[in-house]
Image (tube, rainbow, N blue to C red; front, top):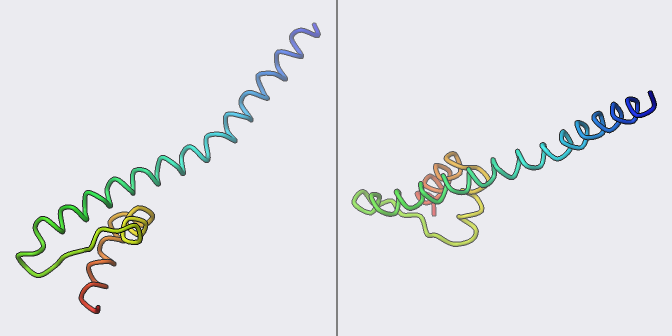
Length: 84
């Protein structure tokens, strides 16, 4: 009987630990996905944008903005480029 109680508590502990670890993994996965999409968007803007006068310099600040914000970050960088 005590083996079953220990097994139940172990199963509950595994579920709790899995839930605790799932949150950071989700956040890191989302950040990596935003980073990849942002870098691709900057590349596309720098490939096709010069014909209409749009370029985004690629450095760690623009990569960080595009990585954290994703597509809205790239749009922000394009708009910011018009004012600078």
